[in-house]
Length: 504
Ligand code: NAD
Image (tube, rainbow, N blue to C red; front, side, top):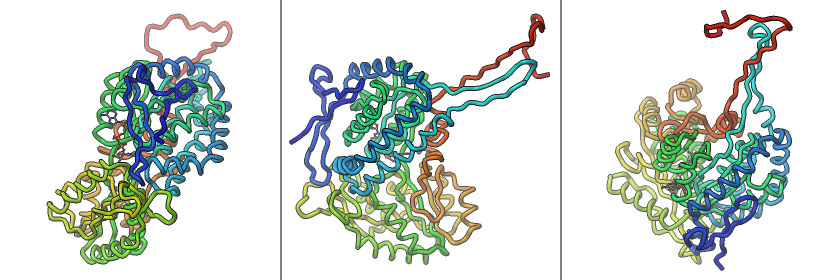
């Protein structure tokens, strides 16, 4: 039976209805079987404005709640989430297609940021300088922005909403989430759990939809900041539109993460890293490694042979089947897009070492599967090198020497993550210092920073000044007020002054 998903506005599940949304719905698949399992209402501008109004009405009371009490709501939320992790992981996996274990990781990465946000009372502290002049003290405070909104991608339906809502709410804002319409159920459940944990109604709202809903969030003057994560063309659109409407924005886009493999690297470790980071979650991760850059032909030949051995053992199947390494892609359009890229690689003259096309799982023939694909001898002018494929396709782009490998990663238009495998500390330090990419790994497959550091790519992977989570998140979701205060000693009067005050 196809179930109907609801919005979550003002503390209640709000069904989509022809009167409210003009009858526009999206389909939510079970990618493992290819069947439609739910429909999601696509909000009208009217419904989004109603959510903004609820959020605006609730926010001052929440901002006036002391930060420690706000943090306690996050603590209770974590307990509720922990009790329900298995059910949530199963639900997430059934809409996204990633394995249930990987779905648990998606939730856990979000949990770690909420744990960090419990420190909000400390993170929101301002600075204080006493006696900067006679009887004069200067101090600063961080105040919430008001109503803020987040627009999130399909590939991390728990983690990225939690990365945004955690600091936004802990800082005293009201938050409106427009999650991906492809896997929208987990964000709604998260909002219900927050309500159960004691968050006042209206502080966290989930509005489903597409461009129509997003455009209201971008243009309505009551929304003060926009966090976006998704593909680069949409990130650019969101960033420029939000800025044009006077909003703060941080927008994170696509990626093409390189892993440089030096001749002295432990090639088994490097191959294991590439297999996990290249094919995990069917390559549908912004931190997936999609380009291997072996340095020198000997390294490339040996590495490619090790990759092929491992690819032959990969198990692809339904997302809830035990022992599966990765599941289906999110929908049929994604399979078509990735298959199209494989054809482009062949046409451009790349060496197709393993072809994942035409892969199907017996009993699940309608599922959105694609086998692991490996290209060798890919050059920097090919579309399979330049563009994000976002599927289980790993390309090997050989570099003649270290400088060429460094240049490739640095000159690529995306700059999300990059890694190097080597046993040479000098090379690793040089790489870390010089590479023009936002997040760097040394002998690790996926350099996703832990919650108390910040996450963000460079170049066309990130638009805006502040990163996600860590201290930057609290800077993004607050504005600084600076106070200069004078309490002159009794009877002291200086009279009027007509020059600008200085510290002379
Ligand atoms: P997407 O850009 O298609 O969608 C992201 C969000 O934008 C969704 O909520 C969607 O409904 C909305 N949207 C789509 N088209 C829109 C439009 N024309 N106007 C307004 N809103 C629109 O991305 P996706 O396919 O859901 O996610 C995959 C992409 O996200 C990949 O490019 C991946 O690299 C990227 N991603 C980046 C990061 C990062 O931190 N840099 C993290 C995860 C995913």
